[in-house]
Image: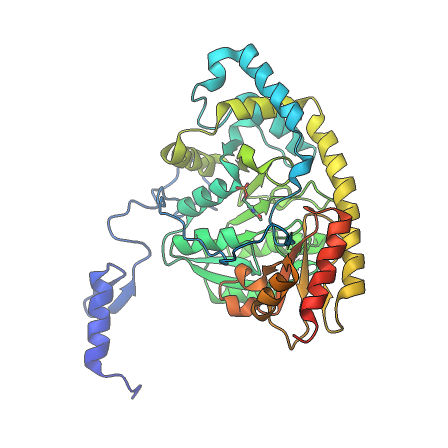
Length: 441
Ligand code: PMP
């Protein structure tokens, strides 16, 4: 067929791909895409069953992250509705100061030795108990403490996916996950989200057309939309992952910050085959700077993650883990969560009410039942990047929707607003300024 491309061009393109080790030729048969870079030791056979994981695990992936962050020079009197964190005024500073002192007196030098690669065992045991109450039957041997869940994301990605492979994400999704996937050279496939979470029909279509190596999802109070994946869709997701034989990475970054409704079962608790890797963090629900997150994974996945963790940073801070264990095990964490939920719920309501008052017609927004974020959809005639400088001029800043999409153009119609990090009065003023910025936009 005449495609308008000369034979010479095609031949030199093939030669280039061969030179890069991306394809191979078989005499009399044609060209074939190589599944991974040449020389990489990949997919050693697993002993002891684990059909869900055969041919899937590697030790690769230590590359640097690329960041996609909007460059904005902030002014101190701006109201920041763009943040990704909770309110630092709620950090239990006095309690942690005391706990750190107590741990150092009680445990002496063992508190500041490297500690186990997997993490401080009593913390893992305590976490296993907390998780059991959420339907995840696990034990200390299946929990790996990481430096925040961002590290968990990198470790899991490096373990399962090779450059050129595909990963399924929600569109929009957490910007830091897009960074990790881009840095790994993955093909990113996007599936839409509504108020009930990821669209299962779209997911099915994507899975039947492509052969992704991972589904990354944020089922509870999704970042950036606040959506919570509906119970029936959770079951559908597990069944689709089984049918198409795709692992799932469940990012439960804020699952304990719930304001209403019953907690949905975690994907991990619904998973019959050990196909779901679960991760969570203390960053949003307690203090981000502790840098403590964790992964729950089974069998060979866990063993591979442990090797990878050692390669990355040997172990997570021992002292902090000990203090955290004391904080969680005596019920203070639970009390802190309750306090935070009461306050953030009021702030969510304040933001919803302010949006009703100050948004122009044509704007719409999500009503999250938990978490930190509301997703605002702009009237059709406005784009987030046009609005951002106007909003800054009014003294308010938001996270433009483009940050959360593979192609930033797809996010022009929306923005993420954080309702958790400001007082009700500041939220009201911030949304009022946002409304003013939209007038005449
Ligand atoms: N997942 C999501 C959805 C997040 O929003 C974040 C933090 N912004 C992370 C993971 C990583 O956070 P951390 O490393 O602090 O646990």
